[in-house]
Image (tube, rainbow, N blue to C red; front, side, top):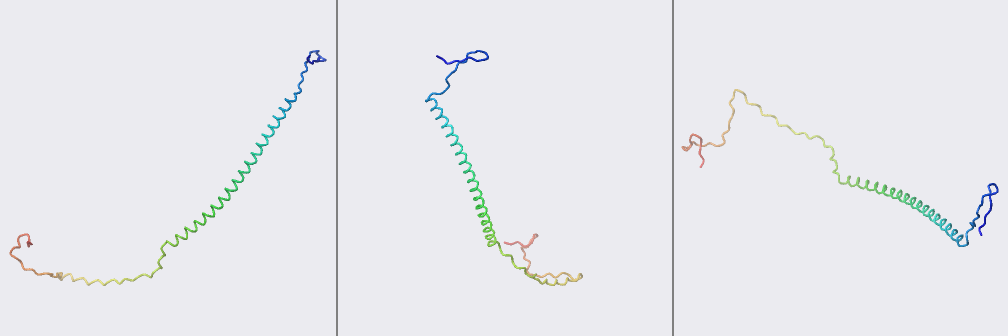
Length: 136
C-alpha cells in the first residue's frame, strides 16, 4: 500500500513516494559523481600543462630570437670585414703633374706665300689624259 498523508489546510491527499535510492542506484550516482570530478580534474591538469607548454615556447622563442640577433650581428661584422678586404685601396693624393706646353710656331707673315713641300716629283706622261694620270 502506498504511503500518503493529508494536507492540513486543504485536506488534499499527498502521496509520499520513497525517493531514497536503492543501494545499486546510490552506487551508480556515486560512480557518476566520481567520474565527473575525475574528468574535471583531468581537464584542469591538461589546461595547466598547456599553459606551461605555452610559457616554455615563449621562453624558447625569446632565447632563439636572442641567438638569432647575436648571429646576425656576427654575420654583419663578417660582411663588413670582407668588403673592406675586397674594396680597392684609395690611391694616395698625387701632386698635380705639370705638362709642358710646346711653344706655338710663329705664324708666317700674311704677305708671304705659303710654303708647300714637294714629296715626289713625277714627270708628266703621255698617258695622262683629261682626268689625270691613269694607273694600270
